[in-house]
Image 1 (cartoon, one colour):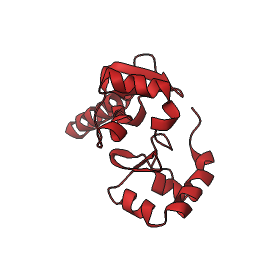
Image 2: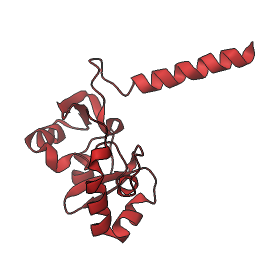
Image 3: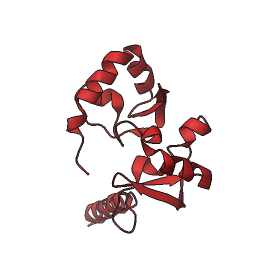
Image 4: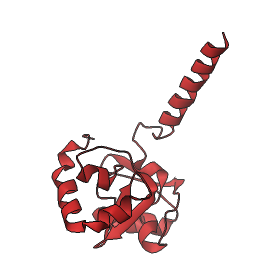
Length: 144
């Protein structure tokens, strides 16, 4: 009986975790709730606040400050990660891997996020080729 209880508990935790990635209206929360503008202004990832949100491109972005939300609203293409919630390095290899917003880089004013901590360094190693390959594989991204 105990293995069944453990399975049910594990399944419930997985469902609860998955649901937390969605707002009450069903709109998915982008980049695990991190503030996309903070990468540019603070120079590091920051969690956004649930009371400072903005829906853009069918995703709900959260912000650490009202100022960051205003900046994003004025120019979302500038601040949003290039491949949504997916690892830029993996996409350059033709793979879809969910990114960890703690692994990131900004290149030519564009935010890229990665699945692993080595991602930014690998991506920059052959930057032009990796950008082109990832861009060429953009069609792999799920529709929203």
